Length: 298
Image 1 (cartoon, rainbow, N blue to C red):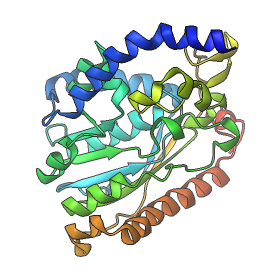
Image 2: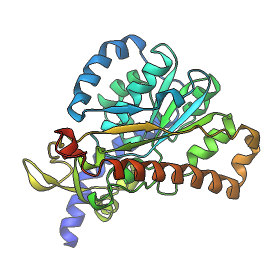
Image 3: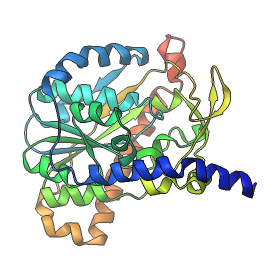
């Protein structure tokens, strides 16, 4: 096993170094390459693809039509991310295509040649950089999934659990900028893929933590059966529901509150509890989103 581990680490060592350099460069990014015309052309294709999940969006009117807003969601569905695409489309429709809107992504996405250029044009910003704060200062909407890959790759048995993994950066960002915080809860996306295990031990062994990647999940599905994430299964056509919850206004706390660990934790718990309550409601209403997709259950 030790020889296999050393061989595996050696095989990924050079590519990791390259990706690490690119990720570090991305974190220095101060402005976005958001391309409005590109998004205008791609939006119909995105929405057509999302019809596979019979999307339902609720209470989009709770999202402020103008001004800085941090939209905070639970993350599901592995890298298919139907929750993210459906939420992003709803955000664009609510605020208008020309209004600045961005999404925070984890480092690995910005390190992959080809992928980086596309997601930048969609308006993606590195979650670990300073660009999000600048965007909110310019009255943008910013979509963030604090749980990141950890939550998106949680085991299928935890599909109805919100797991932001203790990441409080979004709270400090909102407090520093005075932006309104709108939780958005999604249900059904994590029913579309069956994750057996996050594979955090494998990720650690391979050194992926250098890219802030904590997981190397194993999945089960068609056509590969049980397989690592490099052989992903086809997602199931589950019904995905996205619900915008009531906005949280922390502006009276002031920017200095971002340095108060107790208050930061309170605000984090406030959002995490709102998301879990929202997910509990949706799960109780629609416990079988795959069957619901075909009218075989409520």
